[in-house]
Image 1 (cartoon, rainbow, N blue to C red):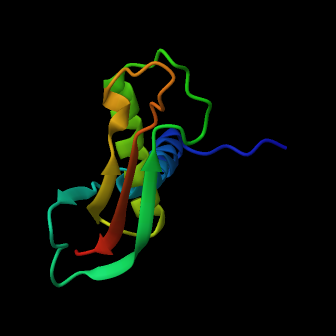
Image 2 (cartoon, rainbow, N blue to C red):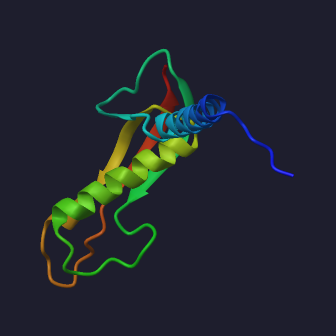
Length: 123
């Protein structure tokens, strides 16, 4: 027994399914792509909900080789800080302490960069 669907109906159903999949993917990407504002200064943002303390390190997730450039370590620490804030539902981070000694090439010295801050929900 063969079921036949008229061609225009088949195309319409396929377009509906394709549109649904695209919208579902767009909403997931929008959640992942939310930006986080990073603040530095004496005071945090006013009128925002404090979610908790977050830490971003250049060593998180893997062993850091000694030859990784300073800028890559700095970006990794910042990205880990942003990821930690997003996990708490935050959209703003106020950095309260930063260990940036990894900028200097001291033989045998620690090259890890650490940012510590408070995550806030402001929007």
